[in-house]
Image (cartoon, rainbow, N blue to C red; front, side, top):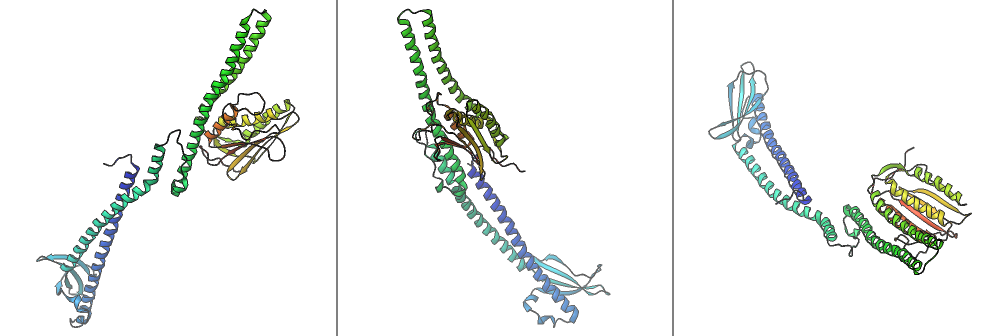
Amino acid sequence: MFSERSIRNRFLIQLIVASAALLIIFSSILYFYIRQNIYDEKQHEMLQFAKNITEFQSLSDTMSNDTDALLGVSVELIFYDASGDEPHFFDDSSNGRDYLVLLYPFEQAQKTYLKVSKDISTMKKLLKKILRSIFIINAIGFFIIVLYAIALSKMLTIPIRQLSHRLANMNEHLVRPIRVEHLPEEFEPLGVTINRLLARIQNFVKYQKELFIGAAHELKTPLAVIKLKNQVTLIKKRSPEEYIEAIKKTNETVDEMNKIVADILNIGRQEGAQLEAPVRRDIIDMLRRKGEDFALLARAEQKTLEYDLQPESYEATIQEGLLNQILQNFLQNAVKFTPEGRKVTFTSRAEGEDLIIRVIDEGCGIDDSVDLFAPFKRLGTKSGVGLGLFLAKSAADAMGAEITLRNRTDGVDGTEATLVLRAKLCCPLPQQKKK
C-alpha cells in the first residue's frame, strides 16, 4: 500500500508514470514513422509505374523496372469526371483484401484516368506484426523501468534512512556528529546542518546542567551567609545601631542574590529573543551607534574607546536583539577590565561574505584553560555573576554566528573578543549594500 507521505513512493510513482509516457510517445512516433515510410515507398512506386505507362503508352517499358514492385498491381483505364489534374490515392477493400488505389490523369480531354491498384494486404499484416512487436517490447521495457525505478528510489533514500536511523538512536548522552565525508555531495549540506544542530544541543545540555548546579551553588552561599549573620545577631542583645548595621549587611547579601536571580531571568528572556523575527539592518550602523555610546562611558571612566568600522555599509537580515546582547557584553567587559588611561579598540572587517567584529582591550587577559562561556565562570577579579559570556555564546549559537575569546598576541596584555557573522546564518544571508 503506497503511503502519500512517503517521498520514495511519490518519486517512484512519478518516475514510472513519466517513463511510461515517454515510452508510449516514443513507440507511437516510431510506429507511425515506419508506417509512413512504407506507404510513401509504395506510393512512389505506383506513381512511377503510372507515369511510365502514360509516357510510353506501353506496358513493356514499365517491365524494365523492378519486377517485385509490379507484384499485386492491376491497371485499368476508367472515365472519371473530376476537377484538377493531380493524382490522388485512397484505400479500398474488397473480397477480404486491402488495396492502395491511385487515380492518375491519362487524357484530360477524354477525362480518362489510369486506375492503378496495389494489393497491400501483406504490407498491412507486416505493419500489424510490427505494432504487436512494439507492444511486446513496450511491456518488457515497462517492467524493466518499474524494476529500475524501485532500485533507484531505494538507492536515493539510503542516505536519508541512514541519517534517520542515526538520529533515532541518539540521546543526550550519546550525541555524535555525523561523518559528512561518507554522505553523497547532495546530502552534505544537510549533514553539516545536523552536526551544527547536534553541537548546539550538546552545548545546551552541558551548559544547562552547569547553569542549574551553578545557580544552586551561587544562591546557597548568600543564603548561608544571611542565616549565619542572623544567628550571630540573635546570640545577644544589641543596640539599635548594631541591629541597623546587621540588617544593612543582610540587605547587601540580598542584593547580591537579586542580581543572580536577575541574570538567570535574562536567560529566559534571551530564549524569547531567539524567537524574535529577523529584520533587515545595516550592521555597520548598529556598530557605529554602539561605539559612540560606549566611547562616552569609557571617557567617563578615564579610558578611551577607538573604533574603526569597515566597510561603510553591510546589510544583513538578523535578529537584532541577539546581536545587541553580544556587542553589549563584549564592550562592557572590555571597558570594565581596561585600566584607567588605557584604550579599547572596536573594529569590523569584511572577509569574503563574512563580517568579522573584534573588541580588543588592554586588561589583565584571560585564563585559556577555563571555559569562560560556561555559566558562573568569572573573568578576572571584577564583580559579576558570570553569566554574560554564557548569554553571548547562546545568542551567537542561535544566530548561527561564532564567538571566540583569547589573549592578545601582539605583546600587549589584554583580551581579544571576536564575533564572526557568517554568510550562512540561520536567517537569510547578509550582503553588502550596493552603492
